[in-house]
Amino acid sequence: MAASGSVNYGVEMEFVFAFQEKELLLGNSKIQKELSYGIREQYPEFTPIPATILPNHRYNIWGVMDSGAKEVRPYNMEPQRILQRKLCQTLPRIPTRVFGTIYGPDKTEAKMKYDQWAVTVDHTVCGVGSANIPGSLPNRNIDPREWDSYGLELVSPVLNSANPQHKVDIKQLVEETAGIPDDRHGAFITKQCGLHVHIEAPQILEVLKELATLLVIYEEEISRLHPAVRMPGHRAAANQLDSNRLYFLHGGDLDFDKTKANWVGGNFSTSALKKEYNIPRLRARMSLIKKKEALSQKMCWPSPPDKPNGGRRRLVNFTYLTRGKGYAETIEFRQARGSLDGEEINHWIDFCVGLVKFADFYVHNPDKFPVKSFDDIRQNEGTPANNFGIFKLMRDMDLSESAIQFWYNKIQQYK
Image (cartoon, rainbow, N blue to C red; front, side, top):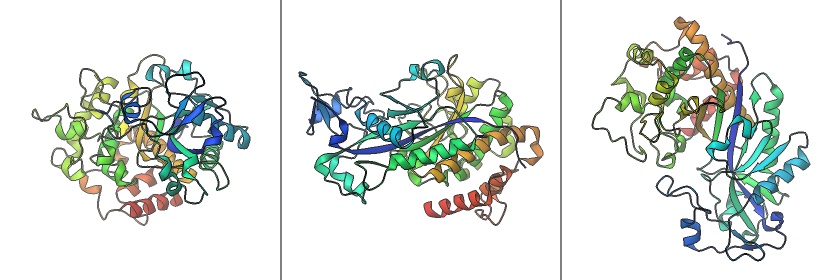
């Protein structure tokens, strides 16, 4: 049941990057390895994310004292340049650029261009502290007094699902980033690391609504493809990954507290959704949506005055449909854990691309939609040998049998 046409996409791959002190190439500047609590916690130059948003994401690594300076500073692209030098040496055919913090207004297509891979800081990912690096890179001979770590991400240029070389590039980039035991740098994944896939948004509202319907119906099943720390309601996902079912579960509850910082401990299960909706009622509710802004408000609910189209920190972010002129319109799949495994990354890209393409297919072939009632979702839990639940959806997307087996193994791993 193949859906035709290629789709543009992009990836953001978060990780912790560790490196030996000598790799920083600081010249006359000096490393300051002991920073006071006040500097690390309270100076926004070091910790730009307010504690009210991510309370456990503090700058906990080294600082730099420049020659003639009176104040210590955080890193200023030095770790990014270490990785860029490595990639230039080993993968010269793949051009890269380095960035510091990329703020929202700088993410326009004109400013970013999205024609090269970018190596940039990620403030939501913290270094682990020098003493913890040997345990994170167990195959290295590391003196923790000489190593530091820093949260980075690789941001892709615009890629296309019809170009197999793009997947080869991803695999090679993460392999070189992870490094080998003889390297004086390496990378690893922590609970804070995510893998975000941006898919070019369909321009037809009915297709976007069909995609939203798929995501609401299959949310719990799709979450089973990832570890528990990436599921809505889990403490590790607080303020990072909330459910796209919030509106459908609580939108009619006048007593629901929309001002909460997060919904840790909430019940966003299919069983809970079944108590509020059946499939026809869910489709009827979606049919009332007439604008992209309204769809974003429902899928990324609540939508307070400072975020009129909802909050982007959902399993799947629809707010990028509404950023306006100059910005790419994308659907951002945020629920995957960070990975340095090229096979895993590419399987997840295929899944996200397949969902978006099949939303279009189901609009034109509504009788082929795989779910008639919520009882169809978890029947027998599904296995690669049958056509229930998430595995039927995967076969509809024409995922290979090896890909389906890969995801079955992941589900078993994360049980």
